[in-house]
Image 1 (cartoon, helix red, strand yellow):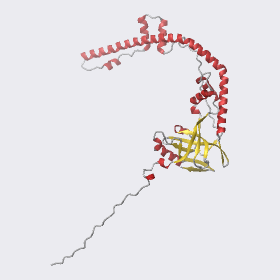
Image 2 (cartoon, rainbow, N blue to C red):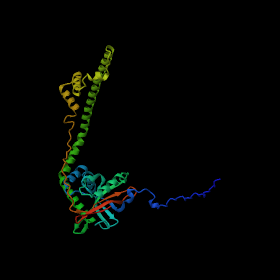
Image 3 (cartoon, rainbow, N blue to C red):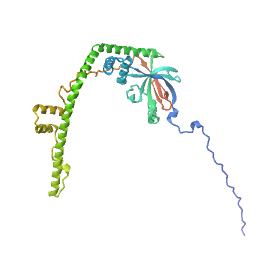
Image 4 (cartoon, one colour):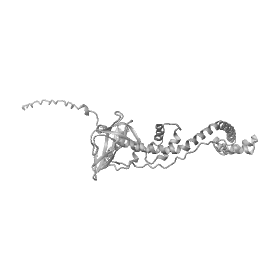
Length: 357
């Protein structure tokens, strides 16, 4: 009888379950680009709109057109800003949190280019900054309320030293342009304002007769329109009758639209001619109705002494006599208004481009 060999029993290995790691609450959310953006600075005060240096002729003309004779200085200047906003340069005061490249920590003024005007940027942008800007615009920048700016500090470079533009210098430059514009306005107002007053008085006196004549013209136009509709109804009625008769005597069908295409559409001037024949109107009345139909009413109807201003003057927007450096792309998120996040900051120093992202 063969011997039975007993094998030692193998106990199953007990494995402990792996517990998840305890994550830092600051990093338990998925990483996004906006988490990487660091605070760059914050706005101080409201925007300041700097006028173009050589636009006094067009701006003084705007004051004459858009404001009343006894309007205040602020009202006239606000009308200029509203009309020529695209020609003004937006300047804001920035409080920089930390020194960046050559910019010192603290407050200074920068020119602001908003997202919709990025196509006007002529500076050479480093490829890494452009890539980072595109990533932000395609990601967090698509959220509603997100604002992206291109900032250029107002400063003068003297060797390795930057001389920043102060508020007094900025306001003095704006006041100089304002004084030139208001001086040009006063020169034009000496003879243009009295003429405007005379024109307004004459137009006011002619308002009643002009309204009566216009009422008579509208009445004649309604009569012609009604007669036109009557003839058009007869044309369509005739086409429908022909189509019905054709279907009765022929085996092939004929639609109303096909029959209507065989007729000639009514001409407005032919309608007027027929209307004058039926109404037995004179040749002068017929010519008057033709003028009304063409949209040109007699001179006494359109009599108006208003002065047409020629304001299509080429405005030469000159570059301010300052040097700008250290531009930066920043973002303003809707959750923290006034706080700017740095997308990319760059500058060229001694032929070498420095970038901070």
